[in-house]
Length: 267
Length: 188
Image (cartoon, rainbow over all chains, first blue to last red; front, side):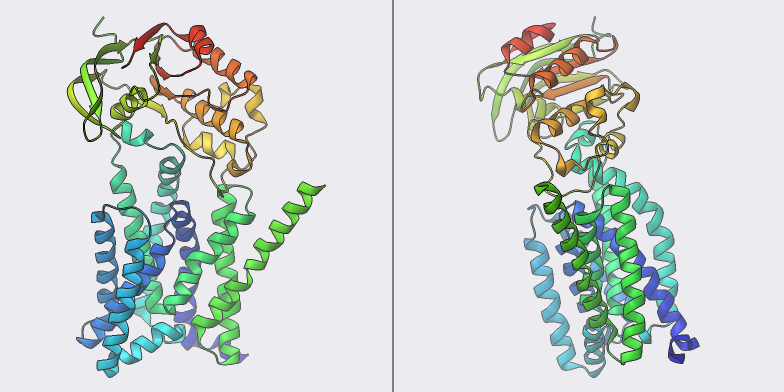
């Protein structure tokens, strides 16, 4: 139990907590836009960027961020809607990541970290990046929520009035890519995807309002993170899979709400 | 009269790959409901789409009074499959004036949009556009899925329109159109 309060775990703990609160809210907006697969696409690109950075002896985090942003630009230029491009990002990112790991010991260690999600090795630059991201993303997300809701529920209204809708979507995708790239480097690719997808999915099923949905998603991300942090440390297990497993269990909340709704409709 | 119009179209031709509608010339003035009439496929919705940037204008000119914003209800906007947004949150996002809300819509405010019926959703989204401060309102088949009570609400709202606002309406229901139209424009 003393392990939990070791000073060496404070930086990883705070870094992960910030991301665990932020990513589910970003996930709620990605779900609103029906583009939640983008999270997995950007995460794989970030992983590929990190592995390439490691291979070429470049700083890993900027390389990961650059690759994820390249994905955003590709999305902006891609004319077709749907998830085809994200599937390409996932497959291309995975192959580059694994091939880079196969030819370099550094990249191989990084690749293993991206799979295991070894949060406990997180250092100061990542905490600072998470803090800056949080400070920038929070006001942006609150502003984006209204704009993206309008885009979904009042189609073409803002375009009709000459509002720069494309820039709004681009800003959201940049925030999504930055959050995913940083989180993938800190807690692994799948844990990042789990934080973006699962709390939002559960919240969409159980929340009574939009405000409740994003607050609930953030709460679920935070609580799941705390449980996973303690469990992974005490059981000496890799953090990423533990967090993913804990968040998978939260699906029970959604199933319970669906059951109650069905029962109420019968009565 | 030119200075008073909210929207003025001159010999406009619109479509997608090629012109489907036009040339048409007409104006929407403050305080009036202008109805676009014509057979199915004549291009009424295409004209509204061209005015809102979804379709292409091939020829002619359009002039919108400076400072006039558009409230637009598109023809197809399916009920969201799963979305935890309440009626009240939707109307707030639309900048709708909640004080002017009819009694019937009050019951829908706390409900999630995905729990509404098709008719309730249609009424709410038409109201979200009507209750905006936009002076030029474009409604594309707003009576779809509405029950008689909903149609009556919409009719009252259009007849009680503020004198500085104008409506461009696409609607197939002859009786409804007869009750609200100040002017009709034949398309096709």
